[in-house]
Image 1 (tube, rainbow, N blue to C red):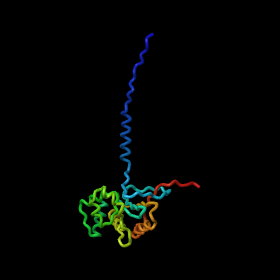
Image 2: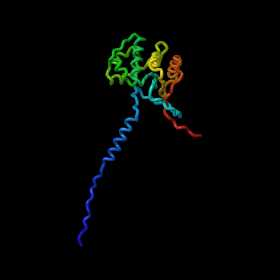
Image 3: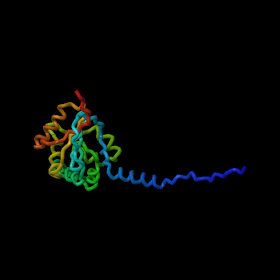
Image 4: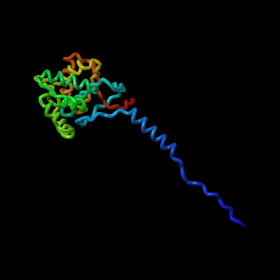
Length: 201
C-alpha cells in the first residue's frame, strides 16, 4: 500500500503584528511617563496614608537630607534664570550668559551664592560629586533659602512649594525651613511622603 504524503506546512510565524504592538506600547510609555529629577542626596521620606498628588508643573521643591543640608529645584528654566539674576543683584554678583545657561538646566541646586560662579564653571560630573557637600545656608545670619524662595515666588506667582525631607532629618532643621517660609507668608506647602498602607484595627 502506497504511503500518503502529508503536505509540509511552514513553521514561520509572522511577527509583524507583534512588532507593531510593541512599538505602539513603547511610544505610549515614552510619551506618558515623567522622568524623576536627579537629586544630589538619597532621601528616604517618612510614610503617610495621604494620597494627595502634587501637581506636575509650577513646582518648587525643597530637599532636606538626613544631615540637614538644604537643596532646591524649580521645574521651569525661565524661572531658574530670573531667580539667579535676582540673587546676583542681591549679592553684587554678575552672571554671564553661559553661566545662566548652565544654571537653568541644573536638576537641583544648593551651594552658597558666593561659590555659585565656581560651581557653574565645573563639569557636570564634578558638580554632582561636590554638590552634596554644600547646601543652601539657612542660618539666621545669612538665610539664603529665604531669598531663593522670595525671588522664585516673584518669578512665578503660581509656584507650589513641596518639601521633601528624610525621615531621619532633625526636626529643628525642618522647623527652621518652615519658619523661613512663614516669614515670607508662605503658609501653604506640601510635604512629600511615601505611601504607607493604613493598618486596620
